[in-house]
Length: 104
Image (cartoon, rainbow, N blue to C red; front, side, top):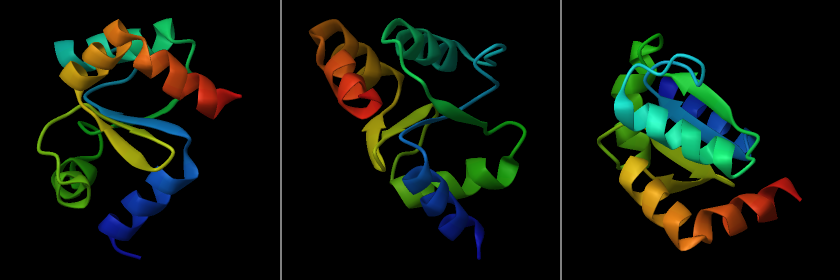
């Protein structure tokens, strides 16, 4: 299985998954920190992958997701977006609804 196939499996197997720089406890960029904080505010249970520790993921994921930057948030196997989209959805109340439907 190549890295792109592994990423597709990972995305499919995790209800909510964030590919980020650093970890939720020690984010390595402001966008990742902001996105994690929003997911926590939405009482989300999520998995994460540190793209700094996994350079092959950092290189391959933009090809899989067709999204060039990090973080990337996936819900139910679908790319939701990066920090700006997550923030906009959170402010509109849409993100909490989406996450509630996954966690219920």
